[in-house]
Image (cartoon, rainbow, N blue to C red; front, side):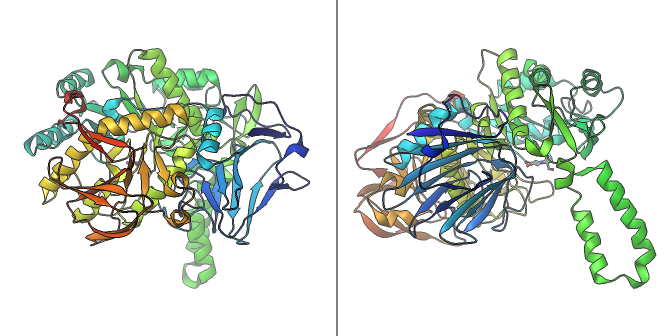
Length: 640
Ligand code: MIG
């Protein structure tokens, strides 16, 4: 049973596709206490309640015990103390053993603070900056039907084309067609499957969006024809910001038409991002979305059919105004060099580090929504949706016959209808595999199905065992991308020693693609989870309530990846008897019947576990080195 409550004058976020009538406040569930000013909700938590949701945020699958802030933030430290990451997924689901099952969606595009049993372990407090929002409550018999009802409200999810389930090789630093050729040649040499390669920001001319460095990319069309002949998709990275440069046609056109966000004085708001001083398209306006969406056209005409939209929180390296303040501080520092106090030093370093993504900067520019001026921070989380939507609608106009791949960094619920997301700049940490396990079901329930993480880790140097374990987890996610930062250890799979293991993992992934793709489409269309917490699938088994290191994938299988360094085995809990497949390769595997209960299972570094559930069927196809070369034939079926 879903209900909508509306307070004040909410901004139209278009997060929902069903317009529900507004219920009167006295119909609000007894579990939610609203403050008199409506800016605060409290919900008491029973000791064994689980609180799911909030998409890609840090901490466990069960969000209890921490505070989260829904405020899209470019932060490359996905540590346990981070309140915000790139996406704001403002839906939670409270599951009580006593039978209370309550979904809460706060549709509000500014900052929301969720204190989920942090200040008081038995209390959840949701605080908003203003009392202008829509609140949806979903009550039901069980978690999965609540999620389905919620997902009907927000509409079906974007799903990438089948080829986008192939392996994606990426790194920040690829500069030219020769880099792509080298990757393709090595994948051939070592017989490693691959479908896509990402172009990161270095392909551009001086970081100007939709331009090419002419020296490195003299003829994009010819290069794309060459790539097409190899069955390789090339995926450019696109930033929202447009470099302020006289003569740069996109900048000039946007400026002339007044398409950029404005500062307090009605001038174009200028902040620094990759291109240096940059302006921000006002994606909240339909005509700006249409204009920006058509900018992809030239690339599409050259043969490109996939993009990743980056930096769309939007990330701001600094604003002119703020930099001036720092410059002023610098002068003062110069005079104080001989007797600087430590407090002055710390103030100064804080000012410098506060230059990026500064909250004050987000309060200093404006959008035009339905002809009205709206301060950015009041609609901050919608910026990403506007960009994703601009791209998706542009694709539909300019390439209606082809499915396009699109994944974005920042997001808000609603954006799930237009594109997928990746989880941003994680690190080469074992713990970031656990983080991904926690994010997957929580992202799914908020509508994001085409998702994946930077496999091997973006920041820091990866190791071969870490990469191997990370692949063995990511091989189940729709987006399966190896990506890392500039200057980090080379982590293309052929750089490692045990290439046989890398090949076996990729082949397994390809052979699982029909199953994974079907599960993903089913989840995207039918409001299901692709990754389901055990406690949702086995609600009568209390023991499953604290299991966060195993997940169901689709209807038929359970995974239990190894995420600990140097581990060659792990404990697994089986809520029912299952058939355990321990793969070393597509053709070499153990097939073992396991009773329900606790088991310790060996999982050597070259092994991948798949558990087949009772009454279900799992299937594998014959792999190929490109998804386009796979035939949906020769299936191997595993039933239990
Ligand atoms: O400020 O394009 O998250 O995947 O490699 C860094 C360079 C900008 C951030 C993305 C990352 C990408 C990087 N980008």
